[in-house]
Image (cartoon, rainbow, N blue to C red; front, side, top):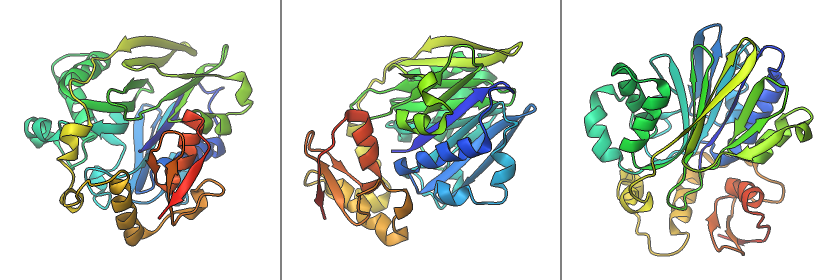
Length: 331
């Protein structure tokens, strides 16, 4: 699945550009079809996104002006493309509109139905874009950002771990997991430090935070979210809840694959993984320099504990999240 990361911090607590880059690169193992990030700087939102892995995007000359230590809020995304080709940059994250910028990990399973109502507002075919466009409609009707997020969650079915920043430097994060589909979201806070950091997995934070042991790492609970903002140089927060998804991701969503994938017959465990692996390998190869040590780029892996199939870049996250360490290679 995709990776997300970011922070909100006052001037004294802002991380260095180097630590931001380190965190951004650490989530590439969750998706390397595309990458992007957005920052709130002096009341403006900046964005850079491209159909390239994070380690390539971070080398762009423009990145040095957007991965800035002046940002009061910053969000990053690494994409494992599902709906919407990464070659069309309108399908890549972050999505922007109404002074907001959004990144999402997860699947919206009622895309076809919802896209019909939102068609005039959509710029691409990625299901994640629906989230921001529905939030914008809530704002157009006079709602707050938080109430618009809650309205969006009532309308859309599916799983989501999201981060949203505004041009004035506020941050919203939320998580909904409903069908066994993994959408983790970890937060890092420290008493007396006016900052909050987040990432898809805890190890992404531990590796990019100075003196990481001083930070409290917590997993954002299911069906919950939080708004963070700075007031008089103090970090403020307010929790909110989300409606549960009304249907499982895997039923309807499997029927809505892009044509290239929908022709495949789901006839055996791991068959879909094999199909996607072969197509992605043929298209662009693997970014082998970001794979976990000891993991081959030319193999698929099966967890000996839970019997789940994994592509090479997914192995490390599974080890960290579930403490399962024994895998067998499958071609």
